[in-house]
Image 1 (tube, rainbow, N blue to C red):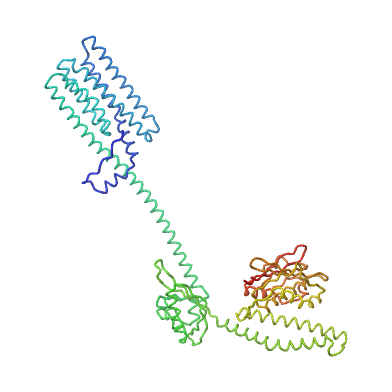
Image 2: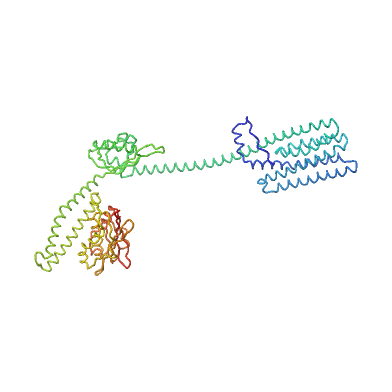
Length: 597
């Protein structure tokens, strides 16, 4: 039997009302039940003692009343035993908190039985006794009703049942006794009952509020304890984070200080805030001389407008900029070229708080690149042209156009022709690599029949294969397919793959060329029966100047640039190249090109 939750008093502070309402109702109920059972021993003893006194005072003098008296006395004794057993069972229960509602029902039943026992006594003994005994009985019953208030006020419905089971039978007897005074008293008894129930209800509210506040404060204490633990943990984490930030700051400061590259810290107005020692060495200014000065003072005047434009873009985009090449003046008047990487530092609000500029002197590097270009130009104009004439002259001699020559002389001129051709191939490969790296190599893409290109490459390289006594053959049938590619460069790739396969295949073997038509790509494969590719060389086979360290490889010669050039040319045409071991020995080199849609 649960009492309804008490309504908050309008005068009660809102914080206390909220705190009280946050308590767990189940725990409040368990506390009320505990309070009821904790008072049960006193209630049981008091009821038993009062029962003994009443039994002595109300003992009957006539035999027919003795049976009624014994019956009532037996009820008092039995109820005392049952209530004592209920109390002991509650104390021994390990789940009395979880089963609070059930224990509340049992104590409500025992209270109803206790009240009914005393109501029965009033109804039975009041009409049959003398006036003095009637006064005693009336006083006794009113005392039991009043005594129930502190015993059962924790749950006012239980008190209402208990008091009603005493009052209403006794009121009925008074009303029907035939005495006007008793009839008037019978009218007042329900009023007194209602007052007592009201008092019990108010006490119930007080108890309920007290229990709720106690649990709410307990929960609040637990929450504060947990909060304090979390705060302590966060303070520890913040302290650790502070140490890490300090360590990172020291590392960054040490990095900037020891870094061989120039590091400048600029504000949002492009004014220099801090510089590292490398900047002092490069430009010849001390940190104090550079601090607070605009960054444009480290840039030649003709580049100021370009710098301001890039600075505005940096402030708007807040994205790092790299590979910025600017001419910077040194203190001694010498202009140098520096490559800069500029990184804005943005806070959590998206505002730029500083800009870090890192630069390195690339003047010597650019000079080296200029010299390399001049060397490449020299190869192209000063070496390739006369070398072509020499090879052409040797070919005329070796072909017999100028007449028969001595066998020993022919052998020497043949060696000279081959080595001249190797030198020309090396020069052409170096020129191709230079054009690719500088971005000056231009492809002329057109729709071509890849089948025709494969057949043409077999024809062009057949004489080269004959020198190594190797046959060239297209197997499996050539698939008619069109691709968008540079005809000359595809032939260059095919020539490179076929010539490599011919060089490394044993005499009398056949280099096979196949085509496979996929959904979006077409694959051309060149299969040889050579010694294969060593494991330690596979990862760098497409690198520049890459050659396997084998005596067989060195005997065959080569620049080590052919596969690197093939890879780059195919990538520029949207294709790819690779290799795999051939079943039965040898290697298969393949390349793929996207089909023309």
